[in-house]
Image (cartoon, rainbow, N blue to C red; front, top):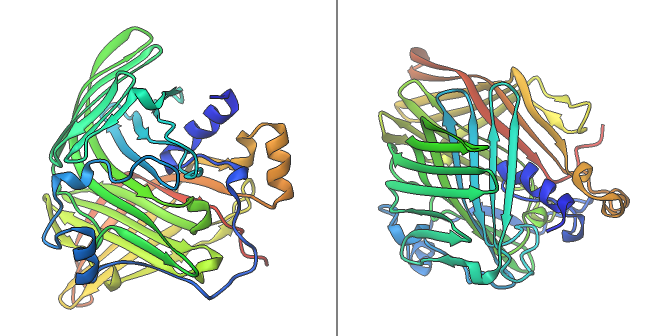
Length: 391
């Protein structure tokens, strides 16, 4: 794998994709002919072999063939007690190039409180990759991830970094409806997402440069797969997860690409003390405040994001308040010269931004706030594949 491609993959691993101009770019002329939505119907569950009552272990097994026309990855995200963050992901191939053969790789990204960042990629061959279909058990060139929706083990050794981690779920596995977002126009495409561990506890060991230490903290695991590049399907999304007092939240607001009429697909899950208490995204009102144009990426960024869930007597409001920008990244900056030129000529200006700041959960009875929980340093992201609105 070329160094430039490796850099691009690592930069975007937290955003679940690597940027490549050759994969195509979003159109600039909106078309209202297509739609995008998450599937909830009984027929959808039946066709996919899923149960609306809950997630089964096989769902975290390999869901694609790995052949052309597919992509898939297993993602693990850890917040360590010392303030570090660690992201490890196992890919069948570059997700923006689904029409390529099986080309597995593993990514490792460690960000420490002092600003030190360590990024590694281990590219493998098809012969070095194996994945079970009845449960999560992924192996690639001595690196592995395995689990049963409740307990997972992740083992990594790439160059001078190594990790032996155990993740124990404290919130049950979940998916929004079937977990499939369908994008319909002349053809039908999908992107599927399974938060196998919405939140869990972490313990294990981490070694960097031959120095090993015990680690603990909280973690998250999800599983993603699809049949065409997300660059073709999605214009932008806000996505965040947080532990806020006794609450755990996963919240996202996805805007489909122009070809799908800029349809919006909200995602929302709120748990308290390990029990899911709100998950119907149709009951969520999404709001932005303090929207401004980021000077570096040219994308519209909100200072405040609100997810307001109201379902009869149940009323919760989750608010993310931007305080600091952790990442402001233009995809083309990580491409080599010729590809960068092609990307700019094609008008591709995708960007990824990650933020941190306080987050709150408010619980209402009627119009009165009866409980407030706070988190001082939640983290959320804005992925922007499409073009920003013209003023």
